[in-house]
Length: 275
Image 1 (cartoon, rainbow, N blue to C red):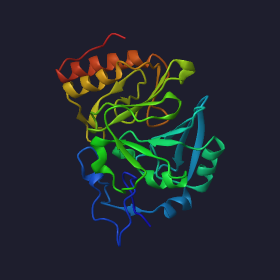
Image 2 (image 1 turned 180 degrees about the vertical axis):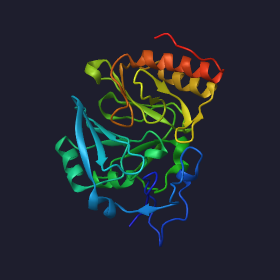
Image 3 (image 1 turned 30 degrees about the horizontal axis):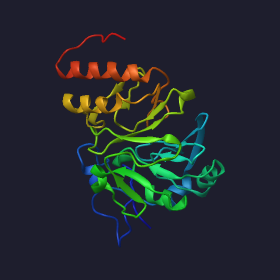
Image 4 (image 1 turned 120 degrees about the vertical axis):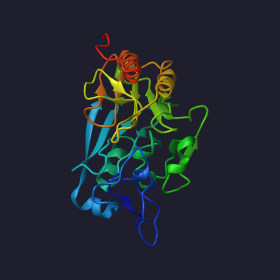
């Protein structure tokens, strides 16, 4: 069976033995665990874990694994009359979760924010009927299990159901992307993000980092490019990669003030940024 990295949760192509290294974990934006490189399989994950589905707002369901595995991110199912989109991915694929997604109308397409959350995306696609998986072209080299379902894109956003739009922001990874759901938040608009930008523990703010576990900040120029890509979008709420990482309202205001704070910190300036 295809090996799954024990630290980042990304599934690799099958071979006679697991790879000696996980390039995603050995990159400066991630890390190899204290026990060194470890591997598991989907069968092993299914033995003692389950997925928990929670309704976040009308038309939006989050999916997380309990107990937590690897990075611990959640996936989000966005329901639209034209078809559903699965945003980001978790490692555990099981029959119960697939059945629950089918009860909600199935999945027409998948989109993944960045390589740390590629997890078992090919396995999910196959379980859901071979749906396309949209990743950005700049991150194609981080796909560890190639498959025809993986659709690298660049330029204009690929066509997604319900007016959903992918936006390339870069920064954390060269191909980092976000998903805009115009109908979310009661029609005020929702932005789904992975690690770029990342919702802070103080949920009035976001942050901009090249590496979160290794505390490498994003440069001023790159942070400004990320925000420039987001300014034309209409949204009031941001959903981040875990349960607590949500800005429920005034998210555009949070974005601008967070950029100001980030740039001031890089210049060595400290103190309160007016809210």
